[in-house]
Length: 216
Image (cartoon, rainbow, N blue to C red; front, side, top):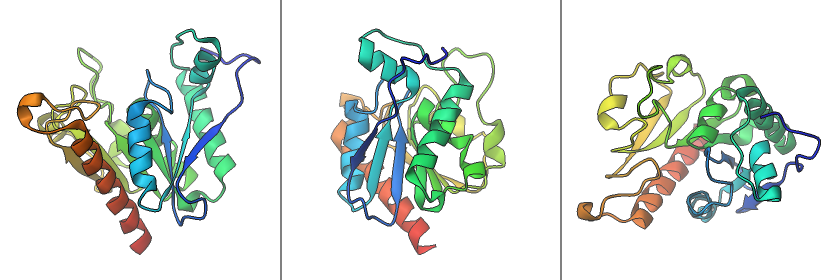
């Protein structure tokens, strides 16, 4: 989809202290907007630790929000352009950690090295969509220079713990495995886990990762 002149302008949703040393920038996944419960849950938890969190909608989601009609994601070029627009709007890329949920985080991995950001955080990387025949989306991840944290559900259909173990990934990439979590970190009732506990754990891992960048 190509944005029209009627595409609403970029808006940034902010949590946490604006004078924080680091800003975590989160983009949404393909089907849910920047203020979806998952996005809000992670943003509020990370912000409570003293890190500024900024969220934004891709152009197609801005149109969907304005019209109330579901839209397909923009073409890859436009998703990348949206990331560049946000990075430019926020200033010094060295203090930015960019990423997001699924698609939004995956797109961020394609701009991080060139943009010179401080780090990457992806919440549920879509390594290989179910029933896909094109293979895993890992080609560019073998040479990634930017430090990266992937929070991934142990039984994520887009790449669980067993599948990911066989991928050739850069040494700059580390993982936090969400216990019994699916693509949105939801555990099965039989596991004894709760979604809140998994979100807490993921947010704690994100905070530790960003604090590690600061100390480095």
